[in-house]
Image (cartoon, rainbow, N blue to C red; front, side, top):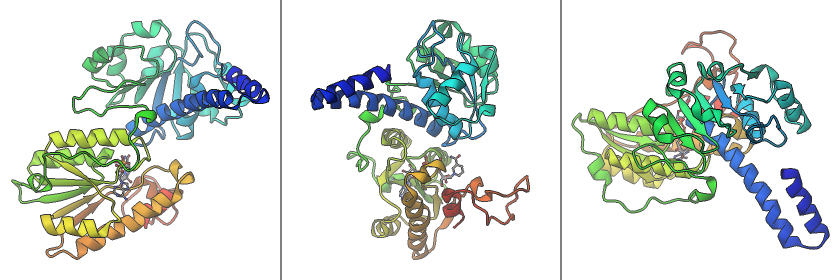
Length: 380
Ligand SMILES: NC(=O)c1ccc[n+]([C@@H]2O[C@H](COP(=O)([O-])OP(=O)(O)OC[C@H]3O[C@@H](n4cnc5c(N)ncnc54)[C@H](O)[C@@H]3O)[C@@H](O)[C@H]2O)c1
């Protein structure tokens, strides 16, 4: 248990064994970090938000064959998902909802209890969910009919295996997008998961490659498109679709560490297989952008590079201003200086409707009541 390790840290400190204490303290920190990274992976894979999405959790207990919830990893994973607005449906053969709630309270973790549901069966937990998350290594979890769950889930259906318990190959055959903690995905064009410890540094520079921007610009439609944020979720898929259509496509991305840069690097690698190069470039680097525009004569710009996410603003508010306001203006200014001027398509966000009480939202609604810094910078 974590508390035992913390006791050990205390004893080591009081005996003057500072280095040993530091070692055990780091073990605790790594555990916490791994849980946060796992939850972060879930949120970023589900298109950067789990708000109002049903997430199915298989297993809440600390370990199999017990109803013990003391210091279970399910606590921090569920807490983070609930904080992000998910509706969490847990199925655990032994754990009772009141025990789980008591443990949240014990750790002073506030949760919206209406959004934490304990299902009576695994099928009920999985039905209509966007993702199944396996958090305890119960044997019965191996025996479930995942094909039947898949049929009733939202698509794309994700499975996050936090215990490396299930067969990835079989789940992928069914159609699941599978992420297993601590295991990399095969090089099949899918993105690859790595623990944050294995992530490259923020300033990751892609290795030299044979594909050149000029090759990427060859087009059968007459359109040559700069896509910003190609290492991100939307930019990656949009670049592939445009390339398949016959457009010339060049991407840029600054590979920032808002979520693991290893995800982004894998996307950039996968894009190369589609003939799209992602240059490591920041929107604010007007000089490099100008050179790129002059060399390739883009007809269009798809501007999807941005600091996304709502919660992250509490950690790094400047990144929203830097990318969504300064970066966008820098890009727009460079585009404006070109002759002929390329057309720009820009990704806004439904967040701009913020505290709007009128539903459904309409494009001509006034968007003067943003509920987050993200929304405010997007609206700006
Ligand atoms: N995913 C959604 O559900 C959603 C919903 C509404 C709006 N959007 C908008 O769509 C766009 C794409 O979102 P996403 O989900 O792909 O986000 P994402 O975070 O996966 O991708 C954004 C990419 O932009 C890059 N980037 C950020 N700042 C940059 C800068 N200054 N210079 C160069 N690159 C930079 C990041 O490294 C990242 O790879 C964003 O503008 C977002 O606000 C997304």
